[in-house]
Image 1 (cartoon, one colour):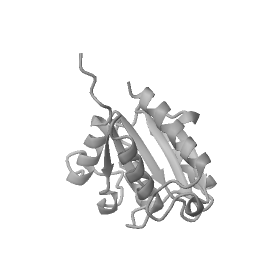
Image 2 (spheres, one colour):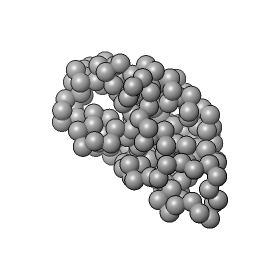
Image 3 (cartoon, one colour):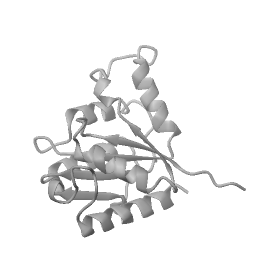
Image 4 (cartoon, one colour):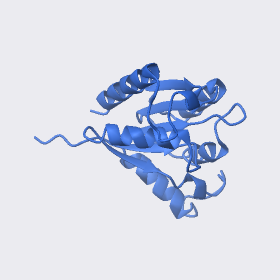
Length: 178
């Protein structure tokens, strides 16, 4: 029997080209390529604002694609900064589009909040994910405060404790996908 590599859909809440969150995801994708197929989904910046009154037939194709990618993935990895003590609006908007579906129900999700402080965004993101039914554990959720001193501008993890925390998160997360 052939074991296929798990598919992880990675979503960055930081959308700029210089985002530390995107750099962390790129580093994890490279480092864990032998163990999983990580797809970095970068289209959330193009999403229209969530409309709770829209019919399924009228749902934009880009949203249908996003929900389909979540459904196909074995697990979701979200790495987000903190903006004004909360999660970025573009990420919140993307997650709101999943509210009327069941794509996150019991879906294994790992969360990395990498910011200057990040505590409020981390709490907010976990609450949103729990609300939409994501399968979360304490072992697959980490907060990296002071990210600029722990991750280089190229995305290399420079802080030993942060590197260990990310390794532990990925080990536990990958085990949960089997």
